[in-house]
Length: 603
Image (tube, rainbow, N blue to C red; front, side, top):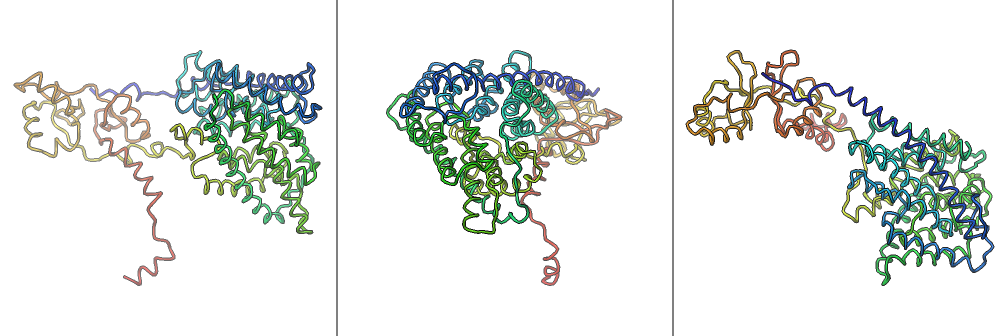
C-alpha cells in the first residue's frame, strides 16, 4: 500500500490557526511598542531637561535652546562615558542605531534578542540623545520593539519564522508609534527585516502597526511628528530640477554610508579601550554643537522649520554640513542612537538649500524649499538604506498630500540608482553586517518552486520492477549496468497489475544484501513501505518540502484519485530544472522582431 507522508495531508487549518495566534500576539506587541515609544519619548525629555536645563521635567524640549555656553561641550562627553560603560558591562548590542542589530538577530540568531537589550537600549539612547547626541528616537524604539516581539516569541512556543514575524511587528510598531506613519512602518519591516511578503507576516504586521499608532493617538495625540503647511511641488514643470536633485540625493546617500564607516574604521585604530570611544566622539560633537546648537539633540523642531521654510540659506547650509558631521562622528564612535532623524534633518536642509540655490540662479524657477526638503528627506535615507519604497510612503504620510507622490517616486528611484552604482550591494544598514561575513538579501522575488506544479517538471516515463523480483536478480542487473535499474537512485515496485506497492533504493539494496547474503529475499521485502509520494497537480514547493522532511531524494508521482497508479517520477534534478527555467528567463536573449527580417535574408 502507498501512503502519503503526514506532510502531504491538509495543513491549511493548522497554518490558519497559527496565523491567527501570531496575529493576536502581534496586537499585544504593537500595543506594548506604542507604550514604549511614549515612555522613551518622555525619558529623552527628562534627560534633556536634567542635563541641559538643570530641571526635572518630562516635557520634550529642544536641546538647541540650552543656555550653558561653553559648558555644552562637556555635556555630550558625560553621556558618552555612561553609554560606553553600559555597552561594556551591559550589552554590546546597544551600540549603533538599532536596525542592523535587529537584522542580525533575524539572520543568525533565529530572531532571538536578549531581554536585557529591551531594557538597556532605550535607556542608553535616552542618555545619549538627552545629553546632546544628534540622534533620533526611532532607531532605538525600532530595536526595542523588535526585542519585545522576540521576547514574546521566546516565552511562548513559536517557530523561528513566527518569532521573526513578531520581531518585525515590534519594529514596525515602533516606527509607526514614533512618526505616526503606520504604512511606512509595515513596509520598513518587510524591506529590512522580513525579506518576504506573505500573508502570514503581512496580516500581523498591519495589526501591530495599527494598534501602535492607536496607542500613539491616545498618549501623544493624532498629529504628525512634523507639522507641514501646504507645499507646492511644481509638477510637471519642476521635473528637470527633481532629476538633478535625485542625483544629489544619491551622492549624499553614498557620502553618508562611506563617511560613517570610514569614521568607524578610524575609531578602531584608537589606542583606547572601546568603552571610551563614545566619549571621544561626543567631545567632537560638543565642539560642533557649541557653534551650531541646532546640531544637538533629536532636532524634530529644526526639521519642521526646514519643511516650513523658516530657515535662511546660511542656516540650511550649516545644518546640512554640521548635522551630518556630528552624526558620523558620534555614531561612528559606537554610541547609541537612531539614524533616521539626523539624516532627515541634513538631507531636508540639502533639498531646501538646492531649491534656494536654483531660485537665486534661475529667476523663473520658483521652487518651493519646503517641497524639495521633503522629497530629499525621504530620498537620501531611502537610497542609503536601500528601502526606497518605505521612505516614499513615509514622506507621503508626513504630508498626506498626494501631490508629493510623483516627485518622491522620481527623486527616490534616481537616488537609489546612484547608490546602487557606487555602493553595489552595500547599504548604511548592511555594511556593518557584511563586515561580519553576513549576507543580507537585497532583492525579493517569488520562489520559483511556488510557480511550478509537479507535472511541469516530473519525468513521465518511469522504470519499474516487479515487487516479486529476487534480490539476486536485481543485484545482477545493477552490476551489468542495466539502464532500467540504474537510471535513478530508487526504483518503484509494482504488482501484477502495475500498481505501486513500494520503492527500493540503492541503500535498501546494500543493507538487504549484507543481512541476507543468499539473496532469496524479494525486493518488496527489502524495499520501503509505505511510500512517500507526490501528485501531478500539486505545488512543486510542497513536494520538495516533503522530500526534505523525509530525508529522501525522489518521489514517485501518483494519480490523486488512485494513489496506486504511477504516473511519473520526481527527483532532485527534476526539481532543480525549475530553477534552470528561471535562469534561462533571466539570461537567454530571444531574437527580437526588428532582427528577424534581417536574419531571414542572411539565411
